[in-house]
Image 1 (spheres, rainbow over the protein chains, first blue to last red):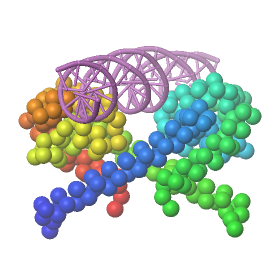
Image 2 (cartoon, helix red, strand yellow):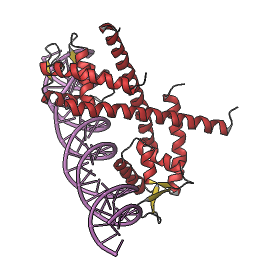
Image 3 (tube, rainbow over the protein chains, first blue to last red):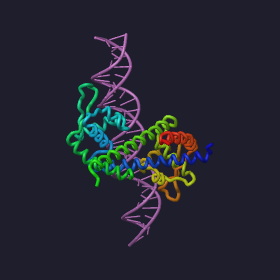
Image 4 (cartoon, rainbow over the protein chains, first blue to last red):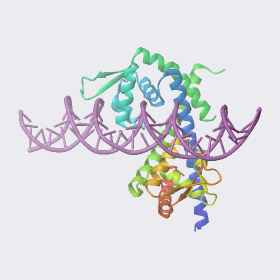
Length: 131
Length: 131
DNA sequence: TGTCATTGAATGACGTGTCATATAGATTGA
DNA sequence: TCAATCTATATGACACGTCATTCAATGACA
């Protein structure tokens, strides 16, 4: 049977584990965000969406599917895409089979930016995720 | 010597690892945040600060030291404390040795809320952090 | 075919975090 | 002891994410 002391110990360990996760998450996200912002003038979320669009280039990418592949809210995705579109990096294409849907495509500029930014992104992941 | 294919594989693994971290971070933080919000009407960050203050009760807690123990910005901490103070959960005490500094103390209400909220918090950590 | 529910996406109000700055108190050194 | 500098905290402008809502298109079914 667990004693009070056991439970307190377990709690402290849980909290410590959680703080480690938090700080490593913030450290990594912050480093990537600052670097992308400085060198490419886009934030981390913008890059993540760009990265997802780039990944699914062949299978033409609906807004909807983005929402399923990121922890971002539907409305957050919509706004990120707004910014990417304004920056000329992606374009929304109407979908004829279902006119509510939209396809996303990288523009030439988007493809170019993604391919150089991705190098930076992977390098920072590698540096921060340890090993 | 690493081939192009090797590097691509490594990159995909890195990205996958990162997405796992992100989604598990958001899942956990979101679950705790929603639960605390619903049951105690405070957000995750408010609780974290409350938790830190509670931890250092004996050694009387300066604002400054909070900043060192959380990934939050100094100004974020200041605003979180604002809200906690408005909610009557902590109070700022001026420090006579250095009048720029502030000590934080839990109020009775703060201590009470913290002790019940902490149970919820640990339970959700346990449920979400796996193991 | 006309209603009712559902779905994909956009939008507006709002809360909170960040950066840069302000302010007041402390410290240093001439 | 006075200026210059530094330090602890607060504040304001701004960016972005969330929730709730809206809108148009689709589907279901009588």
